[in-house]
Length: 237
Length: 237
DNA sequence: TCAAAAGTGTTTGCTATACACCCATGT
DNA sequence: ACATGGGTGTATAGCAAACACTTTTGA
Image (tube, rainbow over all chains, first blue to last red; front, side):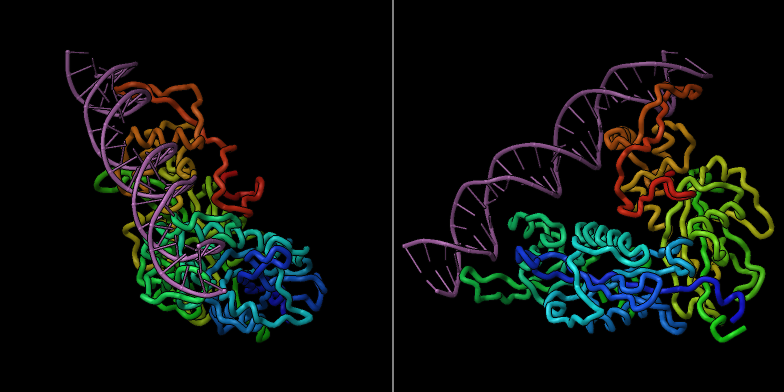
């Protein structure tokens, strides 16, 4: 162990979002999984899933790996959030954390395992976390809500096909406000981000709803030159 | 030197923007300083200013330090851009680069030193750079142009007070298109991001222009929970 | 008095919002 | 039949773009 070895460590953490019904009201809300730390600093506290960056894996790969290890799921959307590296953020060591945020399908997350050391929390009822992770979660939530309004990420919570009501429910859950169904329909259909499949979904005690599919070819231009083609476990691949 | 010492290194680089007249046309355009690498990999190539993260300095501090070392200037605006950490981005070593982007006052940058190993380039005429730095510059330019349209950063290129023509010239230089003076005035004045000082600027062979000052209290809400109060060398402090 | 930029007024068109209304299904 | 959400039509307000016009200076 040389003097250099005590220098800067690199870790990758991920804020993982899914939608679940609120425990009391039953309304859909944003949830995220946390893991319990098993050693100091902050032993016993809840923290974001993550770990040291392996020398042979890319940053997004590392984020997707811890996501899979924590939730047994694959991300439908994955994007870098921010690099946190203040000198005082981890007592006794210098850690730079590259933080990603991810969206997973809510139907898959609904059956996800919970263990003694992994638990899902409602985004607005997060306990006191280790390190600066409360700030990180706040920032990730802000980015999610912000980006939902000018980008095309809502479908990542849903399956291959979906009705506009389901898509609207996603928006309402994330933004925490109800939206006019008529205007929402025009907005989404006009944006070209979804395409009707031709099928409908029957079963409700009302008129059947048209099914839509996400339009991968729609230009969104929300990530600029970093929109790599078909990068592994990256964005909307 | 243990096996661990060969692991992941952390560097901080900065894309520094200023406005200067185009060499041929004389119109204001975006420029940035690059430094010549003195050793391999990519020895002799131009690259972004930066260096290894010191264990006792915050990320933004490191960015501001290399900025000052390169240009002898202080940033008027400084924001984290992205963390680049692909395994293959630096031959023979594993480097994660936290990249910042900065705006400096154009009048200060106009007299900045150029040496054998530091030169300013026009943003649209960048040579082949070391590492993935061309991609980084492209992304920084995209962010600059994007953020200029929904945020209040243009004043960072100017001094304490400025006329709306000067502010419009900044927008036109960055966005590379001419803007209607009348509509620009209404847009800026209506946003509350600037306040008239009461003074005017005489000297042109035309009606004197009112002088404005940036309004620090105006809410912009473009950085969410990360808008720390009075962070050193951070953002619009 | 004239050129040039500062600054004001007005029209037009697009888009978001609100909400009235009709449609198609299960019970 | 009727309740329930799916889906369409339409009026209105606000805002951005285009552009005509007036103001104030230096030469």
